[in-house]
Length: 317
Image (tube, rainbow, N blue to C red; front, side):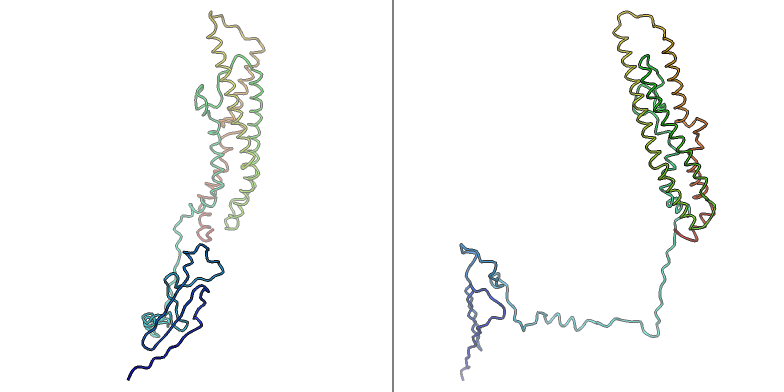
């Protein structure tokens, strides 16, 4: 008996299709034939407008039936085999929590050093303040000196004016550091609590902002600039004197200095001594004890102090 044949023609696609695609779908009991005749828009001179939707079949992809599952049989098998119930410990094996303790291996000395790192930075700079003034620019005199010790024969008034300004700045430096040291005495260091340690840091930061951070920094810069300008002026004057002596054909007897020149030279030497005694920390108003005071408080009264080390052991910062 011959197999009965019936035809079903679908007029409505399962998904929207572009209007330019003409599709006739015919399904039989024995064979299924699909004829697609898309317009080749990419061969046309006029491009397809953006409003025209694209078909997956134009690019070689198949379009899925709305009722067709996108999960394969293999995926379903894997899902069935997977255990979605979280595994718990049996009743006879009670859960024991493991507490992880953090052991602080940093020494109290290092903790305090890190806590006062900013203060130590300024204290060390103050301790090494003389190194900022040593000659590093000129070869005409030794690098371990601050001022050129040679005094030209001329332009004494100009040199005196420069030295006067420089001396006034050195006195400002002495006064500022002296005031800073006096305020350090008002801060109580031997109240050994974590709260007081935090107050110490706040107090020191306040004093640094008032005295060291800006004022001392600006004063030191002015002194360095003054030293450079003075040493440069002296070097230029000495070179001019040497050139003039070379131009002379006959060596003349050196003229004696006038009384005015002698006074000027003496004044220059006096300024030299005063400025150098201060900047070399050899003046009674400005000694090594003055500039190391803040450093010694931090290092010996706090960081290396056993009482403060015990505080940070019990109450970490």
